[in-house]
Length: 354
Image 1 (cartoon, rainbow, N blue to C red):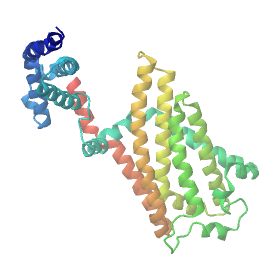
Image 2: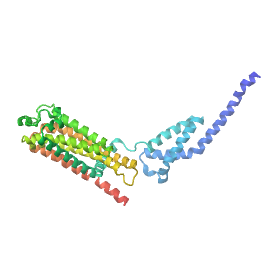
Image 3: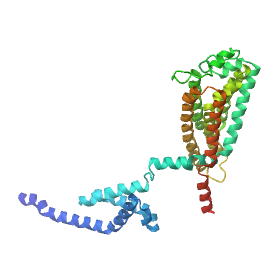
Image 4: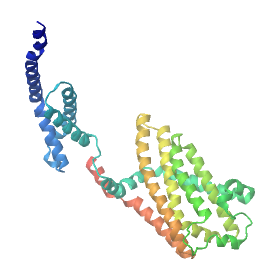
């Protein structure tokens, strides 16, 4: 009896396997039409032939993907068909990349960003740009007036590392020497490096502080431009104002514009929080944050360009007219780019919606 007891499972095992195989076949037959349909859609997308996909198939693709993912979960627990399991795993992985994965390459994204995405985002925050420009001009005026009234304010606004001898009452020749070109390739002076580092930090921080209704952003812009206003007073008081403005314009028209855009992006987020309109506040913040982040990415690129201008063009070009020309050309370039890039595409989209 013991022998029969041990051999009984061995007798029943083939029957169990056959029953499981039948269930596996039935499982596959009941669902394979949807799998094949999803496979055909994914294959067409992978080959870059979306026009071959019908509208119904494209709309049903997320549903078919979820069905396939559910079938995979069941198959992992029940099926004995290794081929079916491997097929489903591959199909679900490929379908996921088409449904949820990135749909464009990095180069395609870059082309779309520079082809109009960045400029359109900048134009969408035009009101905040006007506010930021007013705040920055006001900050420069405040810095000038404070130092003109009491020169001790200069040392409160400008750190000793950044000043580097450029202080009220300094010898004009020392101030002039700080604006001259350098024959060596050791690039930036301490003041130039400090100014670039400061402005890069201000641009990023101005955006990050926008969540507090934009108020800290405005305070930061005022303080940063008060520093510049104080420096302008020192050079104008020494009779070197235009030389300093030319020196600054080489990289300043790009760098200061980046600060303005970073501040505008931050205030755009803050304004969306304070005045969400008919939208839910989280929706308004999300939309404003996406636009602001796109603007900030472009600001980073502008700061890199400003650094190159600061490190090379300004060191190689010494006369005032040429420096103003470089700064003017860069300002005109940015104005044309932000004003025109992507304008036609935006108009076409509005026309289609109408």
